[in-house]
Image 1 (spheres, rainbow, N blue to C red):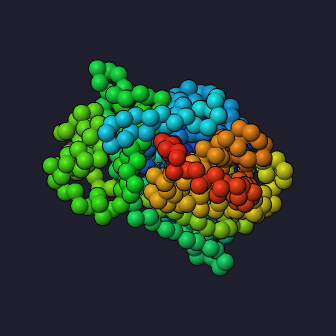
Image 2: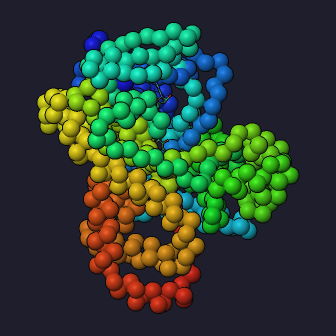
Image 3: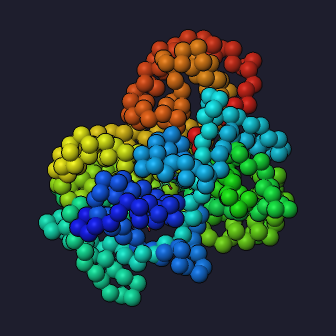
Length: 437
Ligand SMILES: Cc1cc2nc3c(=O)[nH]c(=O)nc-3n(C[C@H](O)[C@H](O)[C@H](O)COP(=O)(O)OP(=O)(O)OC[C@H]3O[C@@H](n4cnc5c(N)ncnc54)[C@H](O)[C@@H]3O)c2cc1C
């Protein structure tokens, strides 16, 4: 949330952003965009300041930053600084039940996805938004000492996540469309420590253990640990209630990880916290008059199976910035246009992420599916401008999300010959697995 009543300079905001970009996410990046335009920006965060906290509690999520996110960072001149703090990922590494590892590169040579470490911990600026007034722009914040504070803003930018308090005001209005969907899978994070001070597995890969109805992934951290994330139906998580149950489960499905995580750590981490829910939120419009606009997960929380939630949120910032140029910073023109332009794209990536969630579980082991992915890549090689794999358009370009989906549907229509090729597919045993992380 930004208050443009006071003055601040870009240098200060820039420094702050660099310190905690992985915590405030879309809000902190947005602050840079506004500050770069010489707006006076104030950021309000409900949580504790991580730089002052003695003990940092909470979870850490590793986020893959791809083209859209990088472009947004570049816009405010911090791409290289942020990227240098990430770990490049060149390929996926698929782990079979028997522990065999098969690398699968990400698309074209030269395309590298970068991983940012995001300590999802309680950064406390101690201003929790309770409510705001659309008439006056007055925001009411709760402080940890029980007091409340009111602050007025000319423009409120709600980047307060999937359960946005800013959005509550929208829900009271006529013609505001809103939907939220929880998926039946949850996720749980487990830590794989370094071995002799080195990564326990090859670091520049997204490690994946696909197991049909569930899967585990592992992403490297700068401290040489891996964060392993287990995605599984809640009902399966709930069946495992004892340490022995955890080990039996891992022996059956992820045996190669047991010595790397360690038996005691595995039991402890698994039983420590319940699995977390994943929600998809869609809404429209994203703005109220010229007073308030939603961005990031507050506008469009997506399930994480396309690795695009943060990237889409970062791209929101560029799109808004481009409209600020187009409409000479006139909020009464920029905000409605932002809704008009951005809603179809965010809804498209939300649908794609949900589609991928189903696709990964239902088709990942289907030979037809795997074969088609190879055909896609081959056709792309032959006709790089005409046939572009959906994943490439989403992850390695700034093609508008809804246009990428349109193009994908068109490509599916113009490839009927694949059905004939499909008859050969029983001869082909590809080990290609198409994950979008
Ligand atoms: C398991 C998992 C893996 C993911 N992997 C990826 C990935 O690889 N790539 C990717 O692009 N995306 C990924 N995502 C999605 C990504 O995490 C989100 O899209 C991104 O964090 C959204 O950023 P945001 O700033 O909009 O919201 P948030 O990160 O939720 O930040 C919102 C901020 O607002 C603060 N806040 C909340 N309420 C209030 C209030 N009332 N008052 C004041 N402050 C408040 C919060 O404390 C928080 O700091 C993943 C998500 C999950 C769950």
